[in-house]
Length: 68
Image (cartoon, rainbow, N blue to C red; front, side, top):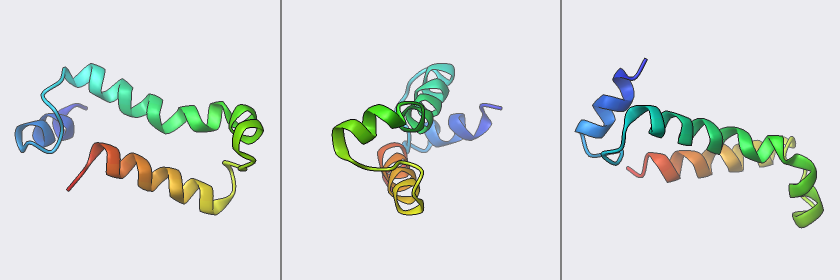
């Protein structure tokens, strides 16, 4: 399960952080925007379930965790 994370850590793509912590950081980052959709809408007016918002969030997560 952690082989891809371990490989990316060894390649220097991901930071040298415990794989379990890194996994749950990634999972939390992916989910939180959608779990807090009402709050996001109240603060920004954005519908996080709109296709363009889903794409924007996916791109943000990819750029945050996989910078290359």
